[in-house]
Amino acid sequence: MKRLAYEKIVGLTPAPLVDSHVHLDSSAYEEDWRDVWREAQKHSLRALVLPSTNLPSTRKIAQMCEEQPLFHATVGF
Image (cartoon, rainbow, N blue to C red; front, side, top):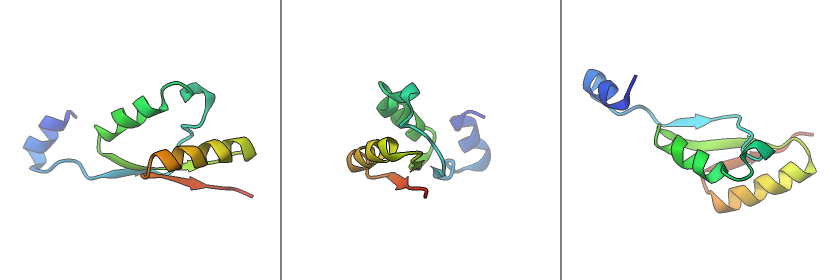
């Protein structure tokens, strides 16, 4: 449903969303993860939880979280 139609029907903007598991540190997003985040924000996404899969991904996610305060890192053992 388009945002405008949703606002007309419900009278509200969509609720803010949090993606609780996204791998923006993946090589698939190496060049454009910032663009992906900007686009997601246009659709009510307000925060991301980035789970790491190994030590290199933990380091990359830590850097991403420093740049983007609405990113949150997780680490598995």
